[in-house]
Length: 248
Image 1 (cartoon, rainbow, N blue to C red):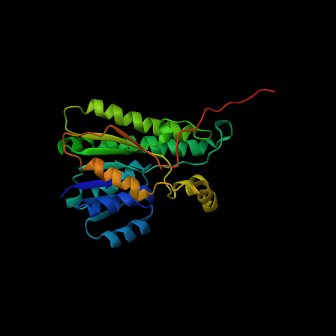
Image 2 (tube, one colour):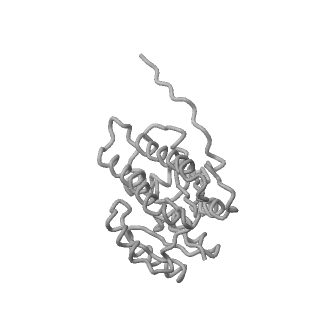
Image 3 (cartoon, rainbow, N blue to C red):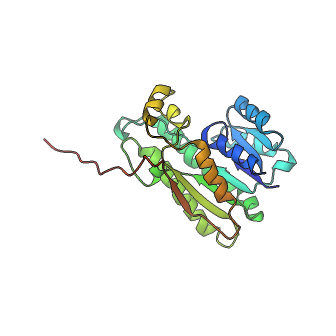
């Protein structure tokens, strides 16, 4: 039985991925900070789901939690780097520097560190790495600044890994969603559910389950097939026009 390690499994896309992989017959190690959510997911999904509680920014806590996994869950065949966040949507000149640091620490540093730690066994097992990037990696928008920058890193890091891992059998994919209605926008707006509801109103956005289906599809392709990058948007979202500032 194959095992997937999914970061940020306490909500949204990560939680949906855990359900999708379990439903397809995999074992899942689900990581996150919120113990009660992981325990509730374990109660729902059963013995093939193993909670792993830590903050992705805390390498010591991560290493301790991974070392404590039951033996049956220690061999990782697919790493789903999902944990990430956006904090605020202010223009760069008005943004909070601590929020920038938190996004970089979570979306870039923690992701790179966990990937580096698991690479030896992913190579040994000829596994797969699926990165959750974003359309923000490609299409800039006002207030996207650091968040878009971190997701551009994720996309480029995935492509760079593909180059480095050539010949190892390890597959690497960057998944780049557009509007997905999860807790993501609530967090971005400081817990304001109304702001999130207004953002998605009338859009018929993607769901976490939609993206989980894509992640599982990528992970279960034949061993000789690699999906390099995959951009996914709801039908009602498209590309913005150029911004023009007028003088006088």
